[in-house]
Image (tube, rainbow, N blue to C red; front, side, top):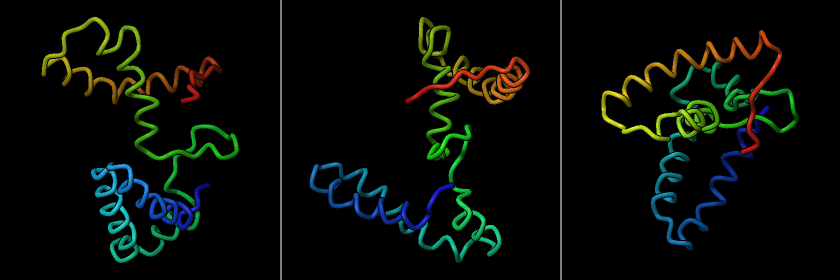
Length: 130
């Protein structure tokens, strides 16, 4: 499970490095993120906040491996975006019009669940180390 306080402390310690290296958009995003996360307790139900922060439910675990929890955006990158960028995916060999992008994106949300169930049924898992 994740350590919420350690997560926020780490983000805060990264701020000077973003500024020093000229990554001002990252610095701005981190400032806004920290501001939102530090006020989260006031906005959430106390039980949900406790579960989210103290029990580590702000990470997603797709494996039983130690230290394998990842952020939700990284989960999206490793699942939906991986298929978009692979052979036969959206960005390889196809023109991307608005209608193609819309149909692919809407279809992938539903197809992802189907693929997960097929992997479970077959006893295999396609994972990446990225």
